[in-house]
Picture 1 (cartoon, each protein chain N blue to C red):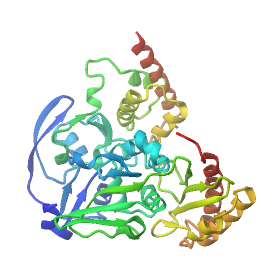
Picture 2: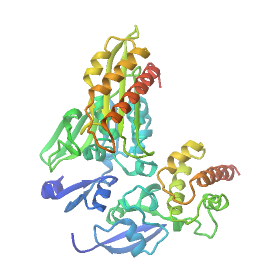
Picture 3: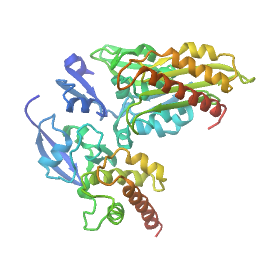
Picture 4: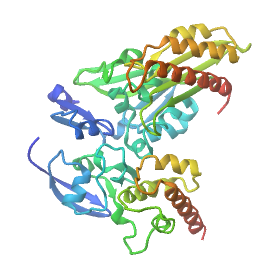
Length: 162
Length: 274
């Protein structure tokens, strides 16, 4: 498979024209061509969750898609969070609850729960742990991430009521 | 279809890419051409008619697990789909993709075999329908021609009074199962088994129904003693590969445990109206 293909990618509301080899992974195009390096490349086979972004609002591993498949789809990456300079509730809660140390896994976790908490505003701790099982973290031991997600969920519910 | 006919063995259809892309990233699979099915919205559907639930190949696991029609008509399928991989994986992975990939430990091939589903295949030559138990040939090998695409799966709806259970053991949450069991159970008015479908996955190259156990259960009430006897029979019936990582004796114990738990749960869900 040789040559490159001209494609249009819509990322965080902006459409970019890029010329990419058809076999270039979405995560590599985001990082190398669009310089959106907040999305991290970890295991490259879908296990670690570090590269999780939103495709049409649903979480997806950017390492398991090719960029050329994403024409006509809305992509959102960690750069869209706190774009206005104010942290999102989950980002704030991760900070307050010490839900990160090195931060490598954090972008993937924020994007995963961005979708999950939108669709499930009142998760139980078990449900949070089940969803979090798809994101590996080697620093925190997960307890503080679980607390942060639960705290963010409760804050988001309060905000929604106001 | 035309692309598949043109490129033949050189081409692989790609759906959610949750199995094929990892294999390509690891250079285990190196197809020359990929035919992307992701934008074929007409293959993302769930239709219920005449006691059959037909589900399009591009229906994502998350939808299979939560669609009200599936939860109502095929609770066994919905529950199993909800255990595939992780939350984000279930948003991309598809029913058709999982079936053609045919990992021996995967949930959906087991459910298709247990419930006697029909696999619908299409090519430029026309339509072909294969029974699930004939579709899975060996590890990651299915009865599909090089120009064919799996377009939908037809599941016979489970009766409303049918008891069911799905259970698996994996090393970590979201990992492939070391062993899994799927059951659909019907009883007559006297509380005796009138039909048991007993599927087992992970311990053989393809998922299988344990017909010996199904027949042994027929006509019996399922008290604790009978459940233990059937579970022991299931565990004796399997012939798992014996490896240092997963000794056959350990797998037999897992199957015994899963069978006991599942038979008990199936009796508890009997007659539950959703």
